[in-house]
Picture 1: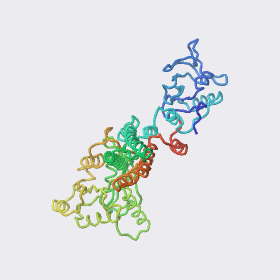
Picture 2: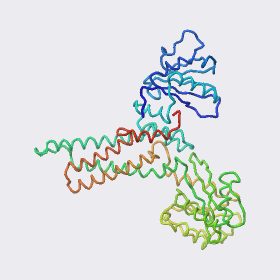
Picture 3: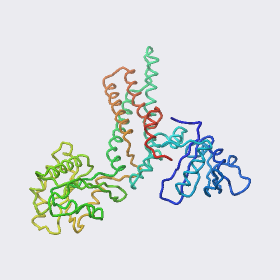
Picture 4: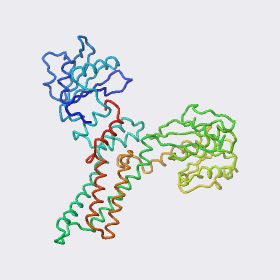
Length: 467
């Protein structure tokens, strides 16, 4: 719950550096800080300072000097939270930080809850809800692509789009409801043709945004890429080459890899989460079969699948593996980047056999590689980027990464589909207005124009403390 009258404090930096920052925000932030901060320059009163000032001094607690620090002062509304606030830059000793927090709390501050600073920023109108969620994504971003998407949302590209769609629907529903007020006079304020066009446009945009979630969620968490195939085709060698380390055990003994081995690689700013899996084959080994079943689960959850085939085993066996990968219904249309491995020891005849007889689906790629020497792996990286980014992941492309936004957009699409059907069937205006109102409600939930304490608590409880 929002504690508007309270002043809160928390570390705003993570460990590992030489300097730490402790943030204090709320109506008494300067008054409380003044009790423990003593400027080295005489005659300075913290509570009388304007914003955007930095003052050098020391923190004293229980009669002892804790540290020499810099105090940054921010005045409402020109702060992150929109409140009076200050930030204490101290040395990063955990003991020093703890003592400063103890001193602040003893003098009237409360320990901030996870996400409380950003929650205050939202409630004070500094950010809308989707921008606030982008803050958490920005903190958690581990690749350039994830960072770009989070920054785009933080700057308001997604919010502006949602607000624009909501504004159009609000205008027309108000006209429809005005007609209902003058129903007996047979007055038409809302142009049905124009409304149909607007609903179709908003529905199309909502569909495009919802469709971007699969990619956005994968980029945010790392693109899951499963390396699959028969035993001894070079899957583990490929993983080791991509990671540039001996992550997986390489052996000529079939069935060496019995469980999924996973690690991440960043290629051109996009994080890929490669998963080496147990070789697919028929076996009586109970443990190995467990690994094969897990392989099929991983394939089902993958964004991309890299079937590795041994060129020298021929196209017939390769096609059997590809068919086995597509055996599950959810994998029928999954994009495969087929890697014909061991070019370093393959004959021309075997290479041509694979090239001419391999069974591919539209959208599949076939790349000849040597996981041992690295031949063809630069092309693999290029295809991986093209498979994910398509025309490119940039700030001009609005990509959603949040499951809450995705579910709200599905509700918007469902409501507007009913509106389209109602318009086509000349449904009563009050029923059409009801469905438009529902779409407006769900659009408002995305940006926080319509929200509940339960939603806010759920969102901000997932933030880190100090943000």
